[in-house]
Image 1 (cartoon, one colour):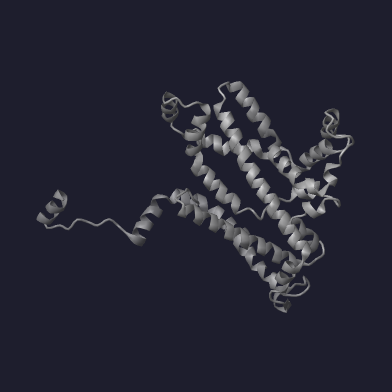
Image 2: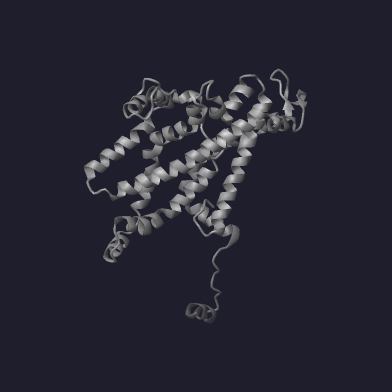
Length: 322
């Protein structure tokens, strides 16, 4: 007020802070190094992510590679109607959602639990050993990992040997030959491969928690588990919510390599997912319009799930992507 009065007394009008476009341009000028660094990424994003979207028009055509774009036969929603009337597509849609759900639940539960346990370890050498052992499978390709899983679950593998010696089974079980077992095998294999890697984000978030909170909780008589429940988990809650929103957006992406490598003719009713469906019945049979329609459906549903999860988090007052 004094500065404003002094400005009026001197006959000068105090300048107003910039607003709107001018304010945006000022902030943009201050951050020009970051903008310059982001230009190559934006170019890559435009060329490889947005330009190819014109290919979605193939889903509405009876596409033939030998013909030009305007010479194609337009069939409207014929391929989409075929998908939703096809029992195979409905089956692979069920498998995709089921395996994605298993991966989501097990992935979150195991990663958060392991991160909490590692955070409580006080012996640095043992903690590093556990972290290294849990991280290593992530760097193994799925080709090698699938070979390990197949060998472990084979009739003469270690799992059958242990079960027979324990007296739980009388003869060997061909685990990958029983369709109903595939989802469980997929979930266990994915957890084994990625649980250590998934804990990195949570461990990093735990380092940002103020140690004074743990000291205050300990002075109030809280044990380790109560400190984990009332201090650690609330401290990493925003990270958990954001990652959960992102993973919900990927519910239509249950993977490709584990299903393709571990699947066979005996368990195909439970192992085949959308990506394999597109490969087998679209690309392999040169039915490109059908494969584009299936991929387009998957992308649209993923967008809807992502925005819905983000809006729900916003209404509940939780952390969100935007």
